[in-house]
Image 1 (cartoon, rainbow, N blue to C red):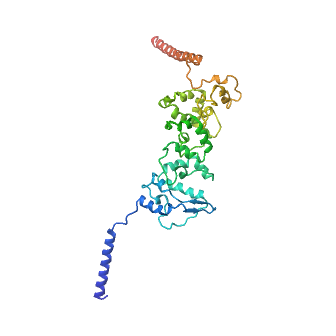
Image 2: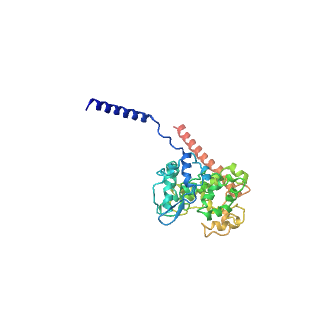
Image 3: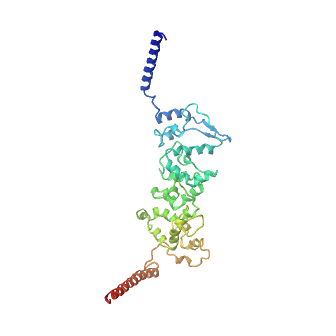
Length: 358
């Protein structure tokens, strides 16, 4: 190589190295913020005519309500591409779905990235089992919405409204119940909503024995709270009296080993109902004296006459209510310690005599 060509090659190498070094030190182009990315997406997805067609011939709108999205807990915090990876490019890569169900199923995977704990609970619930078997079951976005995600349970009535989308008959019965009427009254936070009894993500089959035997524990969340029951004139000992009764004792012993759907004992909902619970003194109440025999006959078909009188309900025995039971209890409360104490004293005296006579 001639000296001139050598100098030119050396100069080109130095310029290339200098350019590379300068480029390496430059900052990367700034990444769009979640709000900026959303604004770009809304440019198309705010249009009500935008939709997707599925292989089965059905269609679904892809419109996003700008105002609803602005109120979402995700707005300004989660970028669109975090839930819809691979769609940063415009036009978007083509993806085909057989049906809307297949399209919605993909959304479950998107939510688990940030909400893995709740997603894992959902996998253990009855909704996921139904979905896996090909039946109609809600996904995350059916309960929380896709773009208008708000804090759960605010207001609490929204929980029952959401569940009523699929369980309309249950929601109608609950709305007429004492709990439903309380929820629509001046103190809605005192009323249980669907998720208080059934939980939210790991919802279990309510027909199983395991679920039924947990009913007293579920009801106790509210009915064992004296401060919560006081304004309504309700006793907070209903759960403790149930657990000390033969029904409650059976439930306590069977609960750890519960399997299948075979009923072993009566729990709260067998006497009071579940979604249609009424006040105990309202017409039609299952635990009114006039209706109590019929309620007992659900488990005891041969019950007749004064059969319900053998049950003390949720009352503690006293001199004014079930005095014979109260006096018998007091008698044994004194007698049993006296007998045991006398037996222990006799043994000690006998032992002392043996030691002294040696």
